[in-house]
Image (cartoon, rainbow, N blue to C red; front, top):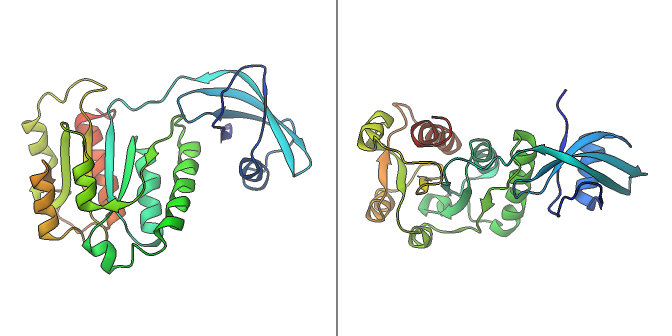
Length: 251
């Protein structure tokens, strides 16, 4: 039976008791259906995870008693950054959720031309808060004990200019090279903790030709993800899985 996990962004010290924040309490009681005395695990989002026991005082107050270390840090073998073109509705939610499961370290929502034409820029501040919740829930579910970083939305050109030098850079592009060409071009993928890998995926409709050219000028190389047209969230999933298989912790 899978032990439920709760995110507690506090110092976790065995033998100490921590009060549950209201939102975490609501999640534990109303979503996970935990009861007083239930065993669980708590993690701090920085790589630490402990056994714990839940103590409830009605439905409005609760705490966890911190126990022994339950898991080692789950830090991905390589830093992988996803630049995700902002898409509508649950397309963006799914891209973020699956990026967390696939071991992405950083997620940068980016506004491209088709993000704007598709209305992806509307209510972006409130959507960002929603995406934070998606990221946290996905982390709890998939067993990671460190949180991926979700950056505030920015324009594509600004995002490209903010990248640190070095590392492998791929842009999802039907005219790009398939994964086997990437493998032969980079026969030595480097050791864990090496240069970051960055994947850029456009929103619905993809990136425009000028935007792909802008990415190529910033050091990106086209990555072809098969012969079919993929939805934006599918492109992110397939691209991340391919890069993890080639260079990351799925090797």
